[in-house]
Length: 172
Image (cartoon, rainbow, N blue to C red):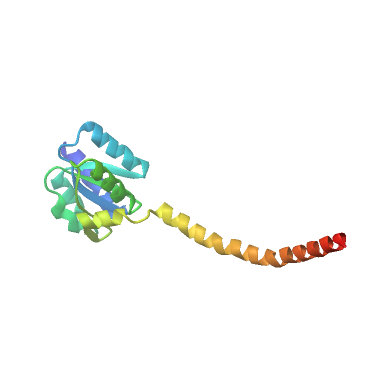
């Protein structure tokens, strides 16, 4: 990498650390190319990205950002996984680490909050933004259907009463 590429890489990482919902830092030593490709495709499927981080450049990119507290995690062969949805990157990283013991989650950041490995795993257990939206819509729609049932109930009861009188008259 020449100086211009390094400057560009640092600027790009700086934007990532400033704007994403969450960042996961992990060691990837021993992962094959196929496994890395699988991790990248899984992350891409949820709108996230995986990048191998040059530690020195990542530490420079972290300076002045809200995620500055995770500088100590950048030692050894590290990668960063990030997504706009704060739960997406930790969830994919946790699932992948469960199947591949060579991916070791070190920690991460969600905004200015520094997370250790357990914090990342706890964040991964939360529902995603899409799941929360679906639950919220379901909760909003449920009262509307109940109101419709209550409003329609008296008309249904009247129809049953009229039907009963009609059958009674027919039988007589």
